[in-house]
Length: 367
Image (cartoon, rainbow, N blue to C red; front, side, top):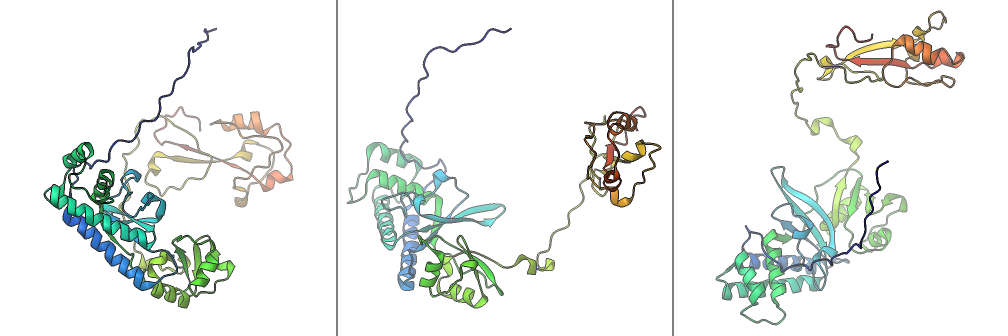
């Protein structure tokens, strides 16, 4: 017997490393014009929500320049005293398959939008005054080490660095446009704006919804209700779908692609046996040889007849089990099928044995 290994000593755990200073990626740069552009976007968004007077907190979407990991999402912008990630209520992809981008929606109050606008304007002034209108990765490293040259109330070097990093990944802010017009009954998913009850929330919006039309944040609306919701609060709709059974295949054409091709089989060995029917319309059909063997035919002289309806995978053998792996039919008969008593149920429920072997199988393979 091998000697047992015994570990001696104590396990020591190092404390987690503190996060380092905020830095820009190697390719990143933040000009003051972009900071002011983001500020203008938020000013337009603020005016929209003040004009709308919605009975819920504003929804603001951040349009990122790429698909971003969690570590690259905005934190200071739209964050207030918390992280902006705490206010995320939805995310989706925009762009195309060659240039996908994230669109993440945040639910914040009006004051947070105002504070973010003020922060962006202060940072833009500092960039123009101290950094010749643009911040680069080396610039931000110097700020982290030496601090800001210009002192402004409410603007620390950490807030400045976080604002630069957030602005590096975000292209613009805005409000999601109204979803497309849908006819017929529609299932709508609403953004979670902090409501406790969907029924009460919809009632506050002027809709009377029965409980059986609600599942989580999803609500089934009639055509008139959907039009009213989209007209009054289009940005509240996260997603809307219709009955998939009513969609016509002609409206969603699928490109026909060529069937895959593989070389013809050679002298490859047998790799397995499958006891299920095989459809020979697939591209690898030349590599599979199907043998349809009736189990009861191995029991010669029993007088049992097998009908087409019996060729299903239903097993009612009294205590018998199918052999594991591939076996010759004579072995099946002698080792597994001769022992149990054949009753009337066997005649009505018979399992077929299908062998699938490559056509290149040597003649010595069992048949």
